[in-house]
Image (tube, rainbow over all chains, first blue to last red):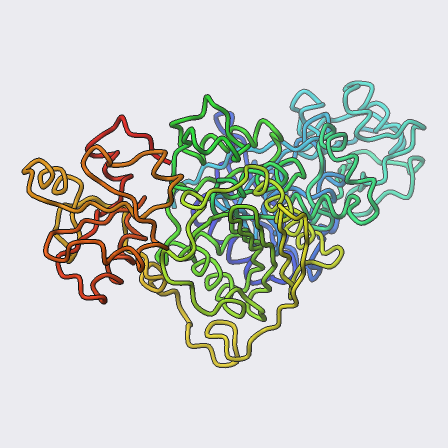
Length: 137
Length: 475
């Protein structure tokens, strides 16, 4: 289970909208608590491509160092699919790390679908969905 | 030298949860080797088969990336394993292993291939009406791997559906059609999402339902819904795959959204109610909706794939008895009220009223002008006062069920102009048909001809069967 505050969820939606037609992207900073992962912050990264994103190593290192200093760490990434549902693409799967959480924000969610969904790669390199719990604020 | 290795969160589960550890090593390569010796499950994530560091793994010593495994490390150095984090919508969703096998015959086609199969997976197609046309449409869309299939239908499965509605089984009788269909489609392909809308499509809900889909297929057989779907598709700029069947004839067309042509370019207004009977009234050969519905599914797949030439701008007509296909060109009508240059219809209207169809689904007992409810008719019959009860349906319909035991006689709608003079103008006349639609038309005709004491049975013999005589078969 991934815990995201309503504020962070709203922030993700706003970033996806603002970046369109490019994909927004960034790192998720979080911590483990009671068997769940709580996202404590986002580390946005600029991107201008509509169909791919890449986090520069320097950004990862800076984010990881800053997070570790307060007992958190980089627990995954977020990005948007401006024209697609919040489901991992083949590119996402090929480039994914097992263990990390991949949050996708849909520009065009399927009927009845959540616009923000979280995924984690299994050892067999298939994505399984991670439930999102919205927390106040 | 004592160096600290920092592990990213992604790799910790392969290192018994460790976030960092201190090792003794002289080079970066030594430090990594001793790391994977301690945690063997890490090896395949960091090194490829030939022992080289994997391409998407980078190692930083303090602030700089190492030049190679031979780079020397100093006491107190920090080695950070930096995962490359990337992705993006790029190619569409990854396929599971069994999906690759399932869609192999598609992927083999150059016109479909991986790219096409992914388009199908990402497509959202709405099927309005889960009946004779909706059955093959739903089954083929699901089998083809259309990722999201929406179904709109408010009805339940009835025994009389099974002659042509191949999506349903005998065990489904009495179930909501959308629920039975969802189970069936998941049985065909568990990878597709079936979204059910158990409602009657109306001007109030149509835009809200249609807006989330890429293609809309109409599988209903009534004019109000057809005009409603057409207008909504133009307003929302969605491709609309039209199909209709009547007895032994079928039609298929694709309408192009806002740019037209649309159904109204072809038929600006519906025929008067009752003139064209529904399938229930007119009958339909069971396999015909299978043919027409399959063609609608074909056109929807072509629209999604962007392959080939769709029926846009054409209408195909099929006569099953003579086995003859005809194709007509269909041009956008510049004066079309919805897709024309100066549209007069800019929002959805009341389609029941537009098509002149009285709502025969309610059974309130209010005495509308010229209408008599089943209960009122029963009471009227029981008083024994003279009454001319006229069945204006076709003879085959009379043979299914009739009110002959209550004194009804058959004068089919087409014979009414010739035979109505045989009726006694001074005595009450009650007309009935199957649902009250044709009898309403007959009522107006007779009144125009000077008959004063004429009324018609609201809801027709179907309402009579439902409310008065449940033993009577309905059709």
